[in-house]
Length: 535
Image (cartoon, rainbow, N blue to C red; front, top):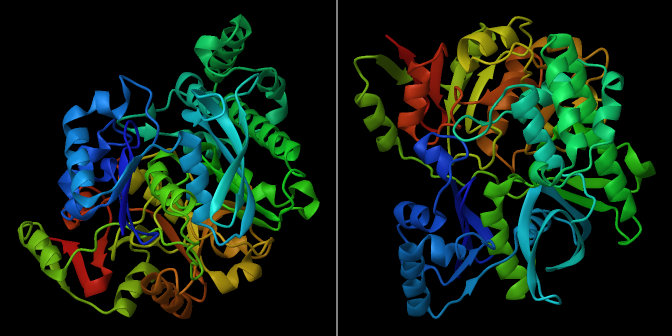
């Protein structure tokens, strides 16, 4: 049975679930090369999924704007209704946080868990009150194939998602959405280099659901911080550090309120705030080890709502049993392009390119010689973080590599760090904690004598947002990393997303255009061992 999950608006996406397993997930931004665009997910599905007539059920997240999706997108809604009628299916509207909670719990291997969703806010239907409410933090109990709401927090809540967006745009002058995307990650990187104490009280006293609902103290506080940030980079780093610390304190307290409500050692965290990997890394030290397992799904922000909406219908509504994942739920849910498609794309740019068949070891030796190589293989990763299928790779042992890639390839701030991909079995030898992080969701601290061996992925505070790689999760990337370990002597490679200020590349054409537009040295189509260089 096919179920389509849908989410329109910003982070527009759709997902196809086949007998409970996500087999395809597409984000509109990857196809139009603009970050976080608004869009009609039904139109997107009908354009990009050729077998849409086989879909039985459709699940779209609750929409309260302009009469819902029926009012906003009447033509595609009618087309969907035709498919449903032909297949004797149904249309479902899971709530915003309901879909978030379903996504993270049903993508985990937990039989039970405390689930916490935290973002800038979204609508959910409350049956007992027969009304739709908008909340920014919700708490759930996941048990078997069901999720049960414990709390929708709406009153006197610090909206962390909105606070970060406001700080990113107003204090630091960075992008907070379309078309350049949310640059909150830059602020998180700044926080590691600052002292939070100078400004922490200014954040602690902020209590708002949204700036339009705040009292004047909000505006006065923000204006003060804006003025302070203008004084220089030291002040900016300290403000970012205070913002980070306030976030950690607040999330810590929220989870603590519910820690004894559910008797479990498993915690699921989802929503845009779950992208704060620095905070996630510290959570392992909270609550005296009460939670031995913390899980963040591959797409915790709103593009993952389409996955969660479909999963909610399959498990909670239709009462189908849980899916047992081998190691982890796959994040590689994009299109896999054939060799003919790759060669056709290369042929169209032959006047600018040269290419030949080169075995993996030869490509890895180019990386060992300080070349930057972008790799393209399999289906693209869902989510904002490259996990080896659409990645730029480099030698982490080179102390100059971070500056080279920031300046010449990514064109971003000098302090932005790069992630290490590491063989899962080696984590305990390199980091202070032995934690699994398949989706690059956790920041951990290097052991003191190990981080110096890989300076290009060792941040200023000796931390790194690592990706752990297993053979089951991604056999192609695991083989690459294993061979790199044999060639270089380290089980770690520098991995950053294959893009330049645009969304991660999706198609071979995108990959070639990005390669030609940057100072990447080589492009490697791993599945077909095709090495590309510029003429």
